[in-house]
Amino acid sequence: MLNQLKSKNWPLIQQKLTPYLFLLPALLILFLTVFWPALQTFYLSFTNYEFIDETPKWIGFANFVKLWKDKVFWQTLENTFLYLLFVVPILVITPLILAILVNQKLRGMNWFRTAYYTPVVISMVVAGIAWKWLYAENGLLNQFLKTIGLFPDGIPWLTSPDKILGIVPISLASVMAVTIWKGLGYYMVIYLAGLQSIPADVYEAASIDGSDGIRKHLDITIPLMRPYLALVGVISAISATKVFEEVYVMTGGGPLNSSKTIVYYLYEQAFSNLELSYACTIGLALFLIMLVLSILRLFVNQQDSII
Figure 1 (cartoon, one colour):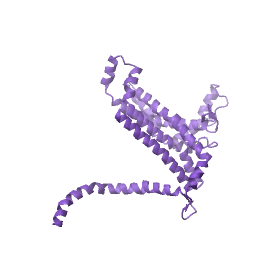
Figure 2 (tube, helix red, strand yellow):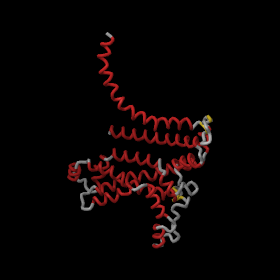
Figure 3 (cartoon, one colour):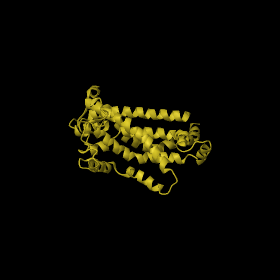
Figure 4 (cartoon, helix red, strand yellow):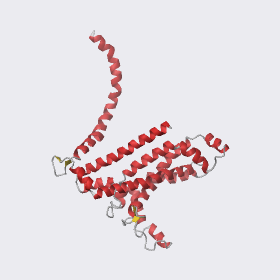
């Protein structure tokens, strides 16, 4: 009787187990490369561990107390939020304008699409070095400013901690410009896909009702592009929070930490100062920030689906 039940239920059990067997290799790799290092990072943030130590020494919340009192950390956190405050709105609005322009059926428009997208395929290291040459004391930008007499002495783009309007350091703003230049084409393509999914009949019906020119984009394009606007907003916010290559190549976090971001500070603590446990604590703080942004994305998507 037992053997009969097993023979009857085995095909059903086998059918249910088969998908999990296919998923098992991917889940194993994911555990070894993502979840296990994340658990180790969480554990090390409560310890004191350096390369010379054989085993971590448990110190409780000492690293978190150190983080709370660390003025450099708060400065890097401020720089990161300045990135969010100034870079994200530009990367949400400007690519939409570019996408609307290149979505026109005009001769030579494919060339403009390619030109706008070209910075995306360029390595950030190459782009950072190129812009560093442009920002140099005798670089192209300063030579141009001197020629027109606007700034006879030039501008210390990457070497000045002074703040523009008392808000953003010049060095940080210079790095922001590279991030914006590099990301415009990527987000433009996302918007372009959304624009091409809008039926032409909608615009034709709107033009009959008197909605034409800029007004048609206010009445039709922006409301229908809300999911894409939310997507670009969250992706650009997460990318701005994780900025590293631009800072590493162009300023090294200087001068006086004015362009140092939280990810660069984490790298500096881990690989320059060999403070692995403290770097894990910074990483945990970064994880919480990313978690908040991810929850915000889920909330925004949920609101869009309701609307």
